[in-house]
Image (cartoon, rainbow, N blue to C red; front, side, top):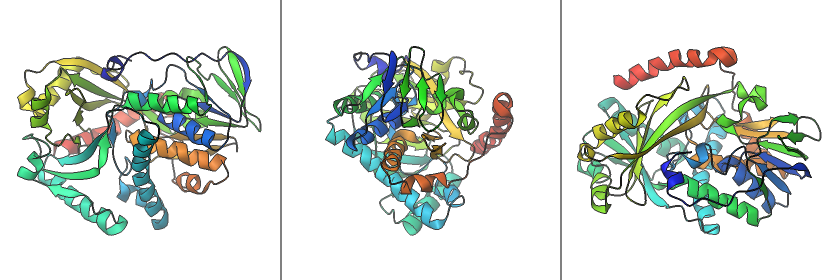
Length: 420
């Protein structure tokens, strides 16, 4: 994982791979934000937990994402409200706010040093999107009681984002951003202290499903009462019926050379994280050492863009011409797991397999919510998991081999709309 995040922290002591047979109450597959939060919450409820990780803690999206903590879900509330009852829509909205607050609480409770910074803003590139921000602000206040958002334009926008590219913004002081790899490692440390057994370099190759599932790795097996599947885009075909419901999509980030505190403050005066409203969006923020972390582009074909560093630098320069001479020090990418409707997909299979996937690029906070909701269900209260399970999901058309070209064609419409 050649990311800025990995380069900016010292190597952690490796956890041993799984060898031989072990037993526990719950086997969690995946040591990212979902899996580690589930493990931590389960351990607090008295469960004996083993976590299996194919690579290292935070190796997937959890440790290399944009690091932005944002309310809501990737599909936005109007789309989600069309899929569920009004009562469930309100519950889901409230839980998304709780998800952001829970991350903040875990950082404090476990003393996780993860470069926490308050503030997040969505920005509009054109009048149509400016109007969408106004409508969004009104809808969230009217339907969900969320009235803390500040609409900004002109000088008020420049006070947050000093870029000629945007015409308006919606600022959320309750949003935030952080160093994702530091945070996920902090969760791993807290889980170990709670008694969770963590095994890296231990890919789950097969699950013997049934009343007493067994998870098989290359060198061992875990006998358990329950399995929590938290591999998301990196889970692969381990459970085919889940694999058919998500699409791994490549997304990419660069880190500039250090800007210095003064130039960083001239670009983002309030140090807020920023996301634009395009379907193929740009998102960016400053790191604690004053680099511009700039994300964007997607690859539905799973083929990384050519000249990633150069193309992403050009996108950064369109937003911040004042950074024209600043070089790029790091460029990396990874997969996010999108669902057909871009709504989260949480539930259970066979009565013993619990899963959370489909964060669709909006998982920095929602992953923690997923882990907590699954832990609640395993402890006997499935109220919240049942609400998520009522969100309808369909397989991607075209099967394993044709779903990618089908999605590429479908996304052309949204790319064209970004240009209008």
